[in-house]
Amino acid sequence: MSKKLLLTGFEPFLDFSINPTKEIVEELNGTTIGAYTVASHVLSVDFHKAGKQLLQVIDETKPDAIISLGLAGGRFKVSPERIAINVNDGPKDNQGHKPENEVIWEDGTDGLFSTLPISKMVEQLKRQGLPAEVSNTAGTYLCNHVMYQALYYTKINEIELPAGFIHIPASHELAIEHGKMPSWSYDDLKKAVIVCIKALSS
Ligand code: PCA
Figure 1 (cartoon, rainbow, N blue to C red):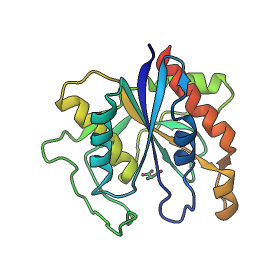
Figure 2 (cartoon, rainbow, N blue to C red):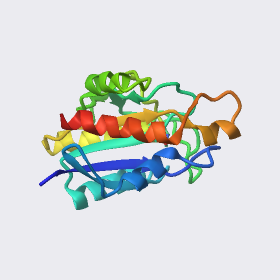
Figure 3 (cartoon, rainbow, N blue to C red):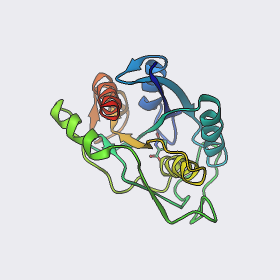
Figure 4 (cartoon, helix red, strand yellow):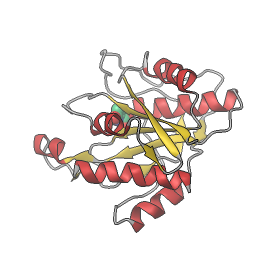
């Protein structure tokens, strides 16, 4: 029997009319890739909701691994994140909430490292001809928030499972709307996510 991968994406936010992570996770939902069958969930870009949604879906699906995806408009490469930090900050979320220098968990450590095989993912992406690099900052917005929440949850509950976050560049559709934005085809973005899931399996 295959293992279960919780794969999350996000709804559109700020001035991005679509979020390719939403489309990718919806398309991969229920498929088997490598050792994993994908259970997908689209999270809200909402500081008050996203963490709760994630913890609820972890509780419901009881995954063997968690990969969360987010759009990083402006980045050139697919970038598995190394670390999440205990901070909420950044522009307004989709509910108009704009946190400044907030902590996510009062009793949380400053940073939590990804437990995904991030170097292996980058290596295999490059081998498949897809530009990739490890990123050393997931920012302080919803993507960092969700990555921190997943890693905090697995740490305090002493659950041993690979968990972490991967940022992807904009799709061509978004680059058409935005000036000077590097972009990838939707198919290559999806392929990159599949390569990362396979890297987790091997
Ligand atoms: N990217 C944002 C939040 C949602 C998304 O897809 C981020 O990088 O924080």
